[in-house]
Length: 303
Length: 303
Figure 1 (cartoon, rainbow over the protein chains, first blue to last red):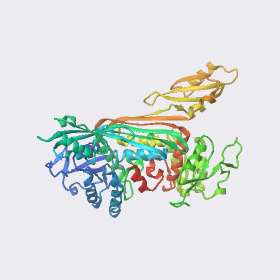
Figure 2: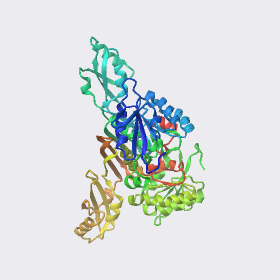
Figure 3: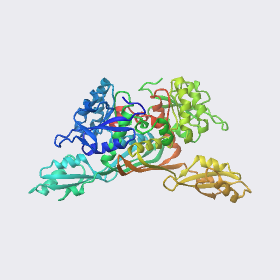
């Protein structure tokens, strides 16, 4: 479907927070073409195109397709992945429920093998980029503890949990790193008219998402003015190589969250078509496969 | 030669700066056994064993062997690699002449294919670990500049160059990072009796290894007391994901240099036996292959 010299034909499935940035990343990549955006919203009306890119319900309309970037919520990833894999289209997703990543891999692998295509799951910055960093730290310093510190930045999972609390009109939960993988939660809420703020505070602090962390709940009248997609991680490991202690490694980033997630997904489109049929996490892919260029160019410039 | 449940039988070839630490790393790894040390020194007398490990001239004496860690100078790597690959033994080396890494790969690949074994070349922290980090940064932030800042730490290449200067009895060159990939060279020298220190200073500063960098030459009477194998890198990249600027990534480590090199080589022994016959740099290997454990264990704990 694609030769080395021909751009890959990519579709973006879903056009929310990540999908918009994924479209940007595909368009910006010299070796990828964005051939369509698949509309998944049930609430917003489908436009016929976005910046000249056709917005479609049915992928057949823009056939052939080399890979699909599934920019849908984690809970919808599996259903969408199966759908595209069964059409023979490799998929990339950013499934981020850490406890079920291996499960998703084992469920998608037979679908990949039956349809002779591959899937890269949990592509993004954590899981994804950070997972590769943790693996490289682990092999370099096999004894020791790795701490992944998130933020400062908005946590989607905690934000959704706070929004579900009775009396909350809108909310945003910001993760603050306190070191050694311990985090503070700063929860900004707009309340519904007549709601009891003290009760909302108590309910958020008792919620399973917050109960184990230091949590502060702050009332605001203009949540929109606080919204910000900047985020980051600091991954730290110190320990022993062989029998030599005091080996110290850290990876630190300060980033626009959806822009980085989407860029990494676009890089995975390049890699997914090069693997033999199976479902993979990013640590199972040779890094060279993600990067623009020939192996010779990449080795000469990066090794 | 080895099953999943049986430890890999590893030999360390060369017992100098890296070889000693490689032996430590293999012994410390639960899934690797050190079955022999191949003596390569032409000047030091061969012991019959080191800490209970047989020291040998001929690998046949301890057959079978699953992989050889070639802890020899870069200039000797190719000859040693060919020798072991032709015996059907996978090899790992830390060849660090950046300008010839792709060349070495292309020369060893047919040897690997003919003998149906693999080789991982240029395994260490730079090239090696740092190469993987640079590749991951490149795919995450495709527009921008990556700076690799080395040190503070002793540079082997610059130390050897300084030692060759007329009138120098012994020398050590320490690399000091000045940011954006620019480095200062601090060269500590012991002079020969009657040598002209001013002339030595001038010659070192004019040497091709030093002429482009800020270089300070310092006389010392006890070079041995300054010797230290601590080192580090700071890899920085800022740039654009998709069309979003201000993405900032950095990788920072402070390490014992030979201990880290040797540990990474030991991890590559695990990976080299899992690849189809060819010569690889570390960016061409799935990170999961380097790490102790089953893919399921590794994905569940690190992704």
